[in-house]
Amino acid sequence: MNFSRHCDLCENQITSLEKGLTCNLTNKKPDFNNTCSKITLDKKFQEKLEIANLELEIIRRNQKSTHLTFYSTIIIGFLLILLGYFFSDWNIHSLFLWSVKIGMIVAGFSFLGIAYSKLNKFRRENKKAELEKNKIDQVLKKYGIEYYPSFDFKEKIHGTQEVIVKVEFKNWTKRQTENPYKFDY
Image 1 (cartoon, rainbow, N blue to C red):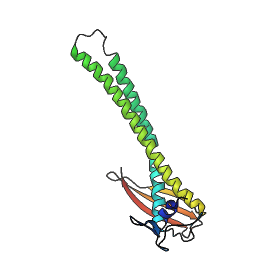
Image 2 (tube, helix red, strand yellow; image 1 turned 120 degrees about the horizontal axis):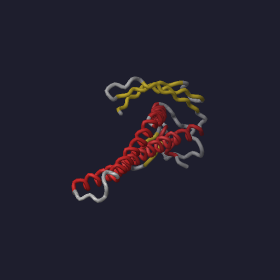
Image 3 (cartoon, rainbow, N blue to C red; image 1 turned 45 degrees about the horizontal axis):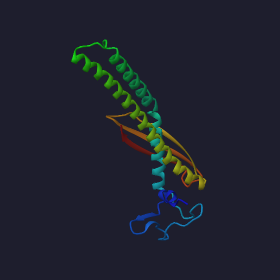
């Protein structure tokens, strides 16, 4: 069983190079079957849950602009390749015109590479954020805790975005939490 997922959310977790992962209450390594009766979910849990959901929401909000950038960069790349190919006939005797022609084709392929790398980066970040959220959700499911996050994005000022994260809980000691987070684009 993967104890670290439970312990990562618990306030009683202690990690050291000598002992590794131990419980602050028992000073022993975690040892439980499905759930820990001594788990203390508080600030650490709340912060990890809010940040994981916020990161996923930010990525999803940027999905349209990422895809727009991808498609526009692809179009520009193909146009450069076609323009380079049809720039002038192939019987050119000028070295300058050949270098312009080849330069346009190379630039077109560079745009295609940039488009792919941007889309690939978005997919990696999305997968990582979903994985992190799912890890937390799996642990909370075992404890019967459900939550419903909502996000209030404030006006962006000088590249800094403030977001109020509200989370309503079901079957947890707190009914609702609300915390502000700031991040830079």
